[in-house]
Length: 120
Length: 110
Image (cartoon, rainbow over all chains, first blue to last red; front, top):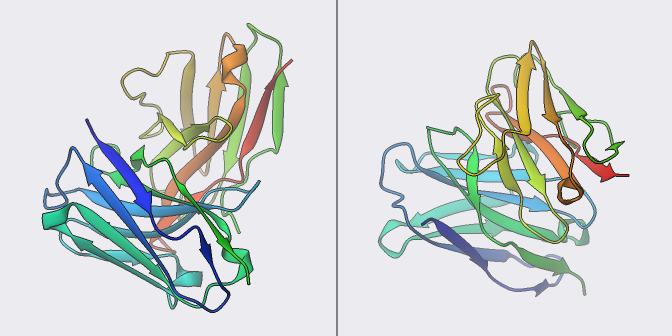
């Protein structure tokens, strides 16, 4: 049974750095083809893919946010981290982490999401 | 800014069929698999369709997906009240080297 759960601050101030943690179980991020991604959704708006890290540590980022994002993993602890610098109120959103494999090619299991509000 | 375009809304009465379109380009839908998600209010997206037309275990066969060229469609037949949700298409984009999601379609059961 695959589960993922996001954790991190619910409120950050403008210009601060956000660090989110995705803690997962039921799979290993050292298995070939497996990846974990981050997706966000501003209130009332559409889903927006942010970043993806693969089992071999290959990483992909949303081009428009690449300079602000860093995704890393700790395979031994079954965790993936997302850092986003210079937070702005427009970054207020629910942030999801999700599991990906070569079988389905997309994100098949998602965490419950965590709402991050950017406000002074 | 979404790269995949969906109609904002769709509706039908219970038992009817509703179809949602997803329009992309040669770098995403035109050359990669399409998937569809259902998002009920206040919950995380749920995978409905992957690899254009495959259903994960547990997804009813009332949901079906198709793809042609740079467009894709999700059809829901035998519409039920519990199908009232937001639906998103998604695909890998070779030009962006990342995933792109659709603008989302709100399905209302009349």
